[in-house]
Image 1 (cartoon, rainbow, N blue to C red):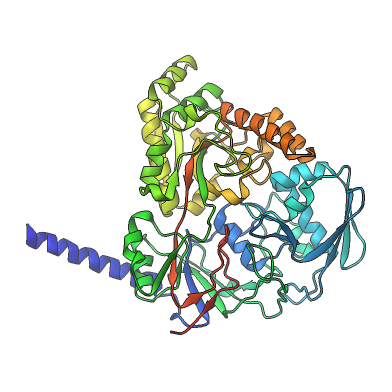
Image 2 (cartoon, rainbow, N blue to C red; image 1 turned 90 degrees about the vertical axis):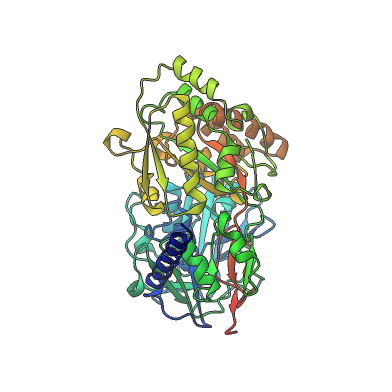
Length: 531
């Protein structure tokens, strides 16, 4: 038996070595001026307006820039443009800074930015509400444009400077005029890196090179604000076949950076002299699941509530994280620790209550319609939730069909509005960063304007009215009152089902320095030595 165990171990190690060799076979040797990173998944969805996926957003920050940025104090700062507001707060004049060029060498103009804003606003939940408050957008000259509001609102600067998901990235006019219902096919930005089309292997490898024409701002880098100084020649993201492969590659100095270290593999890298483990997003994330409100069974409010009662946060967090130092249960859709924290509905979403779930299913006359749950298998931070959700729903009496796929396929499936029987879905789970989830506009999950909303398409007009009230609110006391009402509606209507909060560790070679702490993974500011 011992001899057989040793054989199995040897075979396993050999298989891991072969997988590592295969993953690195198309990757040039690690060099001082090249940073090789393993991100949470491979990149396939390239249009940051079409998708809210974090990989697509991270790609966006590499090659595009934004008019405004957000610093670590949550303050909106000039990035591509400075602005002035009129005394009545209804007219904002934006002036592009000098030296802005697209990657093809053409100058960035006001017309480019206006077209980009309009395309972004058609899809983004903040932009959609903002445009109802915009009277017009005028191009003054090649460097200056003006946005006239029907009424004063903080939503304009907050929207143009939002961190995630679906930041207002600027694109050349010819690209930004692509209908927002169709993905772009040309990837030209003005950001600190250029996308290397010739080396792109969808889902496997994406390469960026330093944009030598980029002129950083003079202020220190802080989140997405300040000087985006690039100190390396190239950054390449490579996908690897399993969670162990990048761990071995980092320990063997074959890659430089792992965006997300699976919690069960943390002990392998925590005590390595040549590796630093760090939580770069100090505020952390919250995980949740989403219902398809368009089709049975979750077009029924009681059945949505039954599912929320069935799933226990502690069960999810133990499976996902394990170590309680990295997680905590939380019912607040705007985040525990954020200003609009509210625990309404905690009895529904924190503990598992299978008996209550069964009673609600009986009351709703659930007929056994299958629940199709999308399960990504390639991201450690997303693979556990669907399994726990599926198990809980089965215990409550749901018929469950798990559909396994990689995360980028899940991201493309999210927009599929067909019924589950026709290839659609019933539930998917994901996570969002708390830095952008603390209000009704940064929090993408809250929008409830039917088929214009994010995947799941809840249609709750009262929520949309309250979001507009929030945008018009004059003081924080009024905003807190509004967000308390929103918390109740979001939970009662099953707009989103919170599963708790957690911190995500990254790991990187000690050859890297000045890695920027941020809710968004960025590759400017950092340096790499050859020792």
